[in-house]
Structures are given as C-alpha cells and as structure tokens.
Image (cartoon, rainbow, N blue to C red; front, side, top):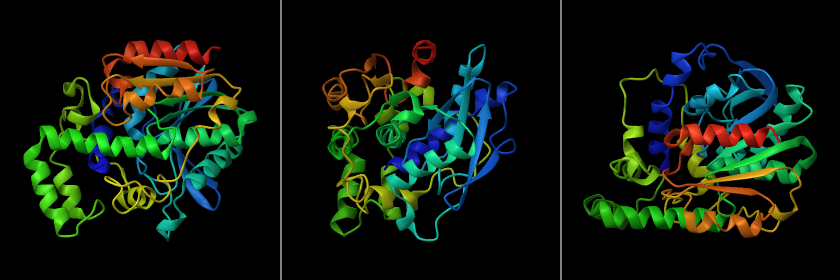
Amino acid sequence: MKQLFIFIFCLGLFSEAWAQNFPDSWTDGKYYTVNGAKIYTVTVGHGAPLFIIPGGPGGSHPGYRGLDSLSVNSNIQLVYFDAFGRGKSDTAKDVKEYTIQRDIDDLEGLRIAMHYDKISVLGHSYGSVVAQGYAIQHPDRVSHLIIANGFHSYLMWQANDDNSNHEIKTNYPEVWDTLMKVREKGYVSQDPIHQEIYGQVPYGFLYAYNPDYFLARGKRKAYPNAFNSKLYYQMVGRDGDFIVGNEIGNFDYRKQLAGLKMPVLIIAGRYDRVAVPSMQVKYREYCPQAKFVMFEHSGHNPQVEEKPAYFKLLKEFLSQ
C-alpha cells in the first residue's frame, strides 16, 4: 500500500530544490563506504549537521528536498542520504540484510565517515524508527532528536494498517471489494496485483489534510531506485499492509524514550491517517520530557502543508 504513495510523494516535492541554486540530488552527491556498502549523500548549507532520515521503509531522499531552505540564513547543514538499499546507494544481495539495526549502524558509520562529533537527526515516518533507535543506542552522539510523524512501536504501526484499511473500506468500497476478491484467492500485500489495487486510492486521501498539495505537477525526472518495494516487504512482512511482521512487527521503544537526555521534538498531524493521532499523543506519556507539537491543518507531511510554521519550529528547536 505505502510504496506507491511514497513514490508519488517523492516525485511531487523536487521543485523547490530545482528552483533555487541548491545541489542537485542526481549529480552533486558524494559516496561514503559504510559497513561494506557505498552510501550516497547530498549536503546543503553550512553549520551544525541535521541528518534527514527518509520514510518508507524503502524511500530515498529526494522527496525531502523541500527542506532545503532551512539552511538559508541559519546555522543548519542538511545532510540527505539514501540508506542502504535505497536510491543511489548500494543494494543487498540478500533482502534479509535489510534490518532496522543495519539502518541504525549505517547512520553511525556515516557520522564517523563524515567526521562529525555530534549530529541532530530528523526521522520522518519510518525514518523516526531509525532516529529513535539511534538516539537510544548512541545518546552521546545526538545533539537534537526530531520525531516527525513517527512510530513508537509495532503496535502503532499495526494501528496504521488498521486505520488505513478502515478508511479505504469506508470511503473506497469499490476498491475494497476488488481487493477482498483478490485476497480470497490467496494474494497478499507484497503481490503486484495487491499493490496495484491499493494504488487506486489517491495519496492525498490517507496522507493529507489538503490533497491539493500532492497533486501531480508535470513530469519529474525519475530518480534511481526511488522506492525499494522488496526492501519494504522484507521489513514489514509479506502481508505487512494488513498484519505487520518481520522487523517492523517487533520494534518497541516505549520503555526507553523517557531516558533520553538530549532535546526531543515530536511532530504530529491532526489529519494523519497513517501515524494516527490517537497513538501520537501517547508520546506525551512515553517521552514526557519532549516538546510535542500537533499541526492542526496537516496530515502525514506538515513540512509540506504547514511549511512556514514547521520551519519556524525546527529553527527554534535546533537553536536550543
């Protein structure tokens, strides 16, 4: 379900990076060898490094280039990267190499390779799973932690599945009926026919407060391996859009979040039907020391739908 939605999202957000004189994601990046694999990075601006960890799992970095202007007139250097198996970085010979722990280890390896003492991390959606794990395992290396429309546990990810499917069943009954007929024949989430049916639901329905922000705006240049669906289903399980399994079906940070000492910012969207508000607000219990902000006119991407307020919040938080 998610891979087509995220791919469309990525295609829709390149325009700002092109409109200004920022580095180009296709040609201006640099490779670092981390844990035996080449990882592709693009840096924007100068100052304290803020690593942007994409969602998915399976997503590449270009969809986040709308954050570029954060680096203007600020002490922020944005570090974008394609994690192992995504985008222009190396891919695994065996999909079992794709794990949450590998992503965490690669982030630490990338920090070391780029010669940063401390980094701030912004993890969006699945990226928050990596960001939280990194902050828990390497607290002395994290300056600031930003959990953006994220997930604190496998239970929250399952709530994502349950809510998404409820919304589709209620509002797109014709799609749901077709899907049920396919599932009755034994097809599951990872099967192409199953993915194709899910793709009939517009991205903006589940992910946006105002779907107009995510309408296709002309043709965009394709980015290599923009979304790795094999990686995605390895991480969430073969039927991961209904029953979460594998890596995503087992992570749980709830007991550890209260112990984080660095500044923590948690961002949520009132109309987020994926990282659902009923689970987002529980961060206040699990991580009471954090600053929690609910964007009232956003879905899963406040950085797009309420961009000025989002940027103001990040700049203030990172200046602490």
